Image 1 (cartoon, rainbow, N blue to C red):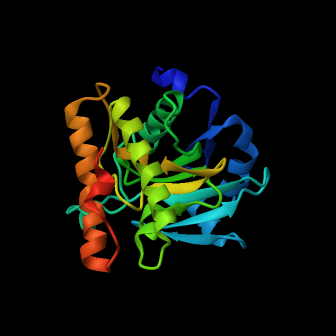
Image 2: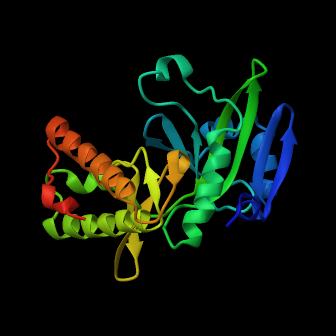
Length: 244
């Protein structure tokens, strides 16, 4: 799938200084949100906003027109330079990359929430602040919650089985996720069991399918995250869970 194909069905909107890319079905939602300021500001002000803790606080809301449940987040940098770069990005921003990667992963059968819209606001001419709105996966819990003491062993085993299937799917299509961690894997009901969804794909690189570097990178990153939760928070984690 080409970049142009990945953005088919989306429209470009302007609202003051902000420029948004919006799925056709959610143009009215975008206009209603942007009338209140940024997408993130509108989410914070929503009466039904439910905070979701991550690198920053995201909000699950009901979109104002279609009534679809969605998650609104403000893009922020991580890592050592985060105190300096904060929420400022150079164009093209990660949001545009996230849309392309999302559509390509979906075309390959990898579970990743739809990008419904994103909007960028220019700051100091060269920089951009960006908000992204994705479809909420209902009744989902991130993988870290299944590692907490007191979680039923059968439930934990099913969650890790789904997570392993997801990592194999990423490896099979050559998708290296540089921030793959136990908070970025969402476990949600699916049929008679559960399935895993990958989140925050704005830092995913697409390369050669099933390349060794992709496999080692994905498994190693997730294993380090699980060990950190075990060592710092008392989470329960068996190394065998990541024998992929």
